[in-house]
Length: 305
Image (cartoon, rainbow, N blue to C red; front, side, top):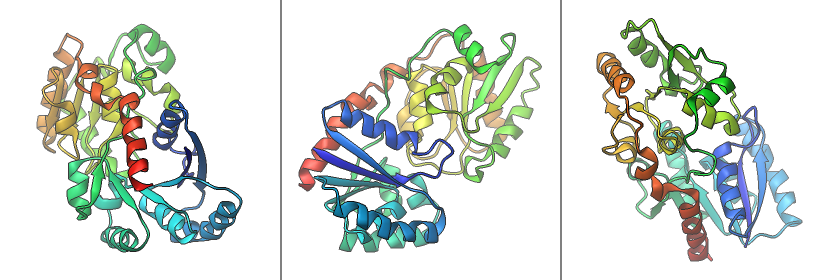
């Protein structure tokens, strides 16, 4: 099958690793996947790509066009990309009433299928005819390995414990202020709090394996990949109850779901630090392996065709 992925290309490393990894999982099944990235922010940045993409599509033919994010999908629709499958992200249905309205209009006139990542996203979207399919995790990339080796890669102090806020603190939705406030209640001299900025996806397994606890305090999420990737590395996790986190973590020992109360978060971090066994998160999310999710995505394409 010939497949075109359309997505933003505005990150420092170009295409989102989530989109690239999903495309790569389809390539491993023997399909041909091409990537078209939209470089430019805001409505103006997306609008100018309608004409660029329309010209591109005149010279290329695909069985399926798969757009990631609502504005990318709007560009794809207005450029004539068909049949059009759309993957919505958390920000599409959580951050903006305008985007939710735009989604309903384009879905009625142009889109053949909408994919959301969780039941929570489906409810927020307000469109019944959506398919729930989480992003898969590359279990060959994200796996447990020696903490000593991981620490050497990250450059962290080997004599201390490490809490990893696995996001850029400047992104307001990630709520770093709450993470920092909770961490300050620990009063541990031998524990450090780290955050991530522009770390290539290929290095992320090392950061997960170097961390003693993964911390997520976002205001909202859809189905955060960082939690699934950390689970695949058998990490200990403390995360607020947003998106499908409670469902993903389930009853995995050493992993804790909390409220937005900083005292409770600090208490759960402390419990995770004192939990001496390695969690078995990898087994708990075996059904989210990209090798299992990729054929399901192809099945969606076949339904559309």
